[in-house]
Image (cartoon, rainbow, N blue to C red):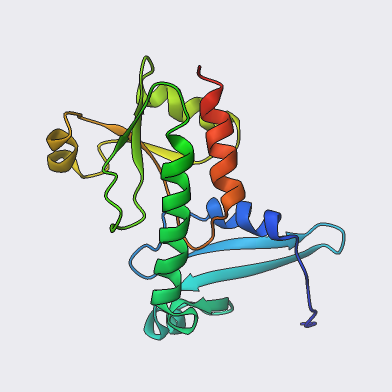
Length: 173
């Protein structure tokens, strides 16, 4: 098998990683990267730990421990802070849980629309969100809701992703 260096546009990588599945499942997540001009496909795994990585044969691995979880937290917190600031400009939005020092979970309701309607329209714009109770019924009920829309903010996101989300949400107004 030939080894070849590949470069990818950052925005392409960001979008691919966004669709790689849930953020940081128990052992990591995976995706395929490809370069259609050269007919190359590369399997990439983002692994939380070496033990999990050893079970995944043939993957190029990005270890979160090498990046440093403090670095990951800082980036996610910066994005969350930016998202909270920008989303306040969306008409009819109700942000759920806006404490400054929290995980990068971001949930919201959009007045006049069901969570499913919001999720479907955002999907049409290429923005992946989850809708429903997110296994967090007690905290949702504390805020007076049974369900919400939740985009994932994680290591692989950028301010451009937040801007795209806000632009798409403004189409509801």
